Image 1 (tube, helix red, strand yellow):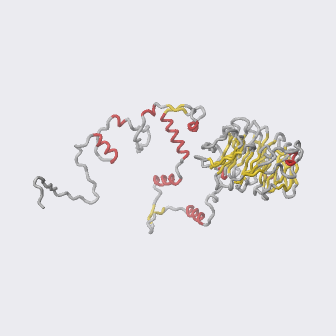
Image 2 (image 1 turned 135 degrees about the vertical axis):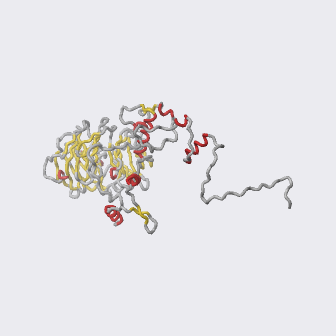
Length: 497
């Protein structure tokens, strides 16, 4: 078929062959304006240079004298940052950015710097990244390629090989192998994280808080005066709300996890208690009064009206409940029906209970400490608390090394373990802490007994963290202090937060 007479066929000239992978060059910039050339230089790093317009120079921040000349300039800057003023005291979320309590208004540049600092606190640089940067700058990271084409460090030390052999020699958890870290003396580093109950705040005073006894279950319970028990998952960031248990007819003043972590015990100013099964979600109320105890007396005048003072042993098989006129009732929790198996009798009413192994320690209103052999139902030791006036709280550590008592005068006596097994009628305390001026309402040792938290809910700023010597820190008004397993988190609550 012939070609159309009016159309002319265009024949291209011979194309110049270029090597494969070669980058084509723009040999002429006559068709480009200054703005296009400037953008090409900025994005692709080409060699053409032109004078940048004045507004482009205003979009970069100059380095301060002595700053690193290799620092990359910012791609964009808001010119209003220099005149912007932000109040840190008016907004609750901005208060954590303050360096001092009196800090309030800051300029935009300072506000940006504080935001970056807070972000780096929450999301710190990983150790592996820091070590990699050090090796990169010092040039110590010499590598060689193995036969399997994997890069292996050539400067492996004997300590690294020993640590690797120790890690691979067994099936034990890596976290369980972590050795105890001795805290340094001086300033205690504390970071205020997001409130644990921010997703579901209490409508009244928070009476008690407690972490789940298992380190694999990051769950926290709170009990408040609005007669509600709330459970939260604690992750330090969002702390989502799990569940709320409302008991309208029962004012909850004390709540605790069972040592096995399967249920929660709720007590208050009533002669009965509630148990909440975490696995089935069922709640069960005990019979009114424990049979054969002061809680089941037929006379209302002689009947105990509160089961608030109670404590589980380490295995969760026995629950000790303080009754009237010095009675401490022992309840067999394994039977499931709260069967009373015995009791012990003090000379005065019980103010606090604490288990040390298989022994039960009780503190009376007369400031005397009793050590009970639960199996034989007899007192094996008794002594008077040093000072002997107003002692109302008894607490020990997990390992049994220390025992602490708190009084209405704000004095905390710390005893060694031989106080419970010695022969002296008035053992001397290892340390008497007189940092508080109001009644001690909370005592708590951390997991390795290096820290002791002392708090009072009478007024603000009544909390002290003790490590060898008192280290005061200003904290909000606290009612209870609890440590998570491994002391990863610490909580103090009072006003619904």
